[in-house]
Image (spheres, rainbow, N blue to C red):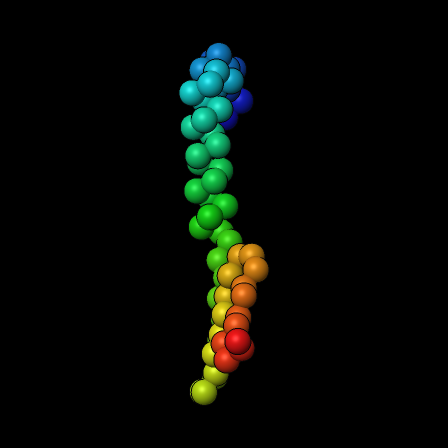
Amino acid sequence: MLDFISKNYEWIFSGIGVFALTVVVALFKRRSSSQSMVVGDNSTANQAGRDILNNKGEK
């Protein structure tokens, strides 16, 4: 691995190399982090990454 980096350091640290590494890291993080939920009978579940506004039945 260090041999590869030493031979290709110009490409790795150029704009294209940084972009490629960012894409690989983002894809890895997306696969490794998942949300799961177990819901029972007669239940309603809401799952979101941010705010949930639940105005059911309110006027």
